Amino acid sequence: MLVQGSEALIDFNLLMGYLFIIGYKALIFFVILLAGWVVGRVVGIIIGKVVLVVGADSVLRKTILGRAIVKSGYTVSDFFKALSKWIIYLSALLIAFMSLNVPYIDAPVQTVLSFMPKLITAILIFVIGVTVSDWAGELVKRGFTQEQKQAFYLDILSNFLKATLYFIVITITLSQLGVDVTILYTIVQAFAWGFAIVMAVVVGIIVGWILKDKVREVLPV
Image 1 (tube, rainbow, N blue to C red):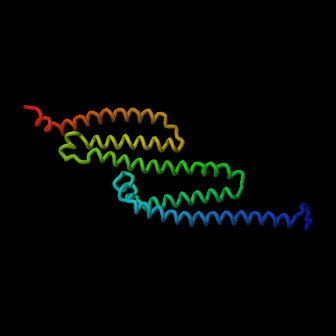
Image 2: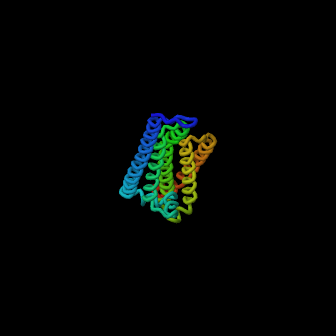
Image 3: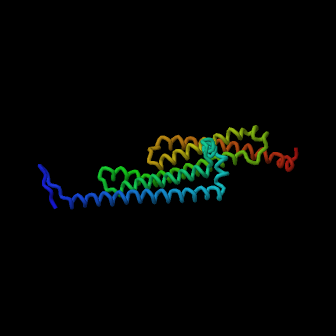
């Protein structure tokens, strides 16, 4: 049916068709948001419980990352629960925008969505890398008395090892995010060679210290 005005014709059937399409897209938009909210909450709860069950909470509390999380007012499990939840919320929001099929929105939203797996992988690399770095640093000092730690400068060596591994982890994380880390790789190689040389010398000294009494028993003085 057509209604003639002073300068325009309005096709009510066409108008109703447009309103139906808009309503349908709006419904899909909010359904996706609701599904994302539900999935995010469920996954967040599961992640939080998994962190507690596998003991990651107590392990991470001993690392620099875990201490930073605790100082911010979160427990480690609550932090990863919130992180996983908000990643899903954001992904659902982006997918909802994609469902609108708006040309000016599709391209940037698709770019962000394609970046999300890299971001999640980078977060995992960083968390695991920092945890292993702290563990390796503490392993250097484990099994030695306080006097031996001071004699072999093991505290300094441990901190140097942690700093080197932190730097390597940050470099790999930035590389995963697509950041050009060519210069950082060169620095990492220099740190790695320097640490390898220092470790070789220290290990030789420690082995000699441990075996000196054994040698005295075997060789006549």
